[in-house]
Length: 206
Image (tube, rainbow, N blue to C red; front, side, top):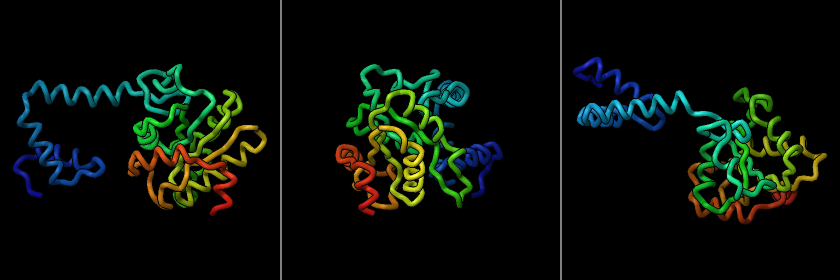
């Protein structure tokens, strides 16, 4: 793409580096910003800079937060004995949008994938096990993507918790094997939560 300005080209390349943004879309966004009042563009850039500078990770669950703990962990109306384990913040947001879950979360930060060089020590698994043992968690709900890597992660954590009385379940197979929870519609996610299965029954059905 030939552009008449080096500054324009640099801006387009910066936007095109974002996921899902091609060069044409990036150019459209940059040209739109150029049409806006200078103050609005400065405000836009300041919002992004402030986000990157001040955003935090919840010390308890791994969610995005404005303080040391996120609004979900500090909400007194949430069910403290129920913990939903998700791969990333994207899945957490997806489940929150269903408005069908009122427990707490734990963000693993990924799933076990030896081919990608991701082992248990690189994920928030140790902190999850500590939470189950220290916070009197009654039910642990696995809501990981239905893939081989996701199932491997579930099995690994289950073995680590075999000496605890916690009830372990997994979301129902409303999501096709190999699918991604982030892109699943809210109704399907809600039903998967409501119809969750004890992990032993899930394993026997594979």
